[in-house]
Length: 169
Ligand SMILES: [Zn+2]
Image 1 (spheres, rainbow, N blue to C red):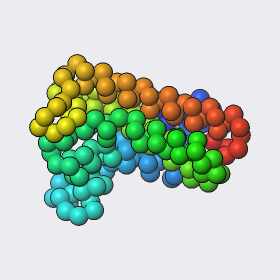
Image 2 (cartoon, rainbow, N blue to C red):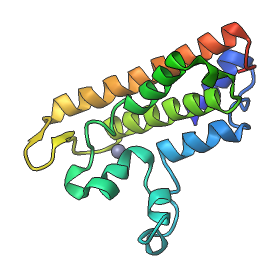
Image 3 (tube, rainbow, N blue to C red):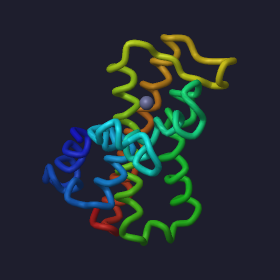
Image 4 (cartoon, protein in one colour):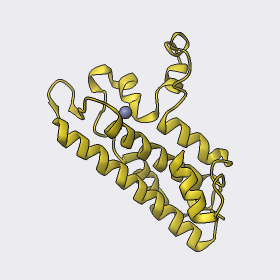
């Protein structure tokens, strides 16, 4: 959220510029904190589970608790893939939803990684469940580098698109 405000001020001198766009706010919300306030007893079943957990923590839901903090879901992989897709298929950038989506995902995952890094007591990035996980300090470094990479992607998106003035981003 703070990143989104900072980017709004930086690019448009308007703190809520991005937050007002649902195509930005929704991916930001889903990938950073999700609806963690959904009561536990509702979040146990069906699709609500996916709303309760932020996107990088879907590793728990899809791969099981032993895979929590999977090295791929806790990395800039998704924003990187989206950026790569825009690179390969430039027509994607013509869709008005695409760049806010990319920006929201990058900032959301970036802030999630940052909070996982500074906010939690134990750090373990799981590479292969039950077999190989990064040590404490390497895991912290992994999360921090991932957060920095996400911020760079977000910066590149704003820089590239705002520079071209194509999308009014
Ligand atoms: Zn996490």
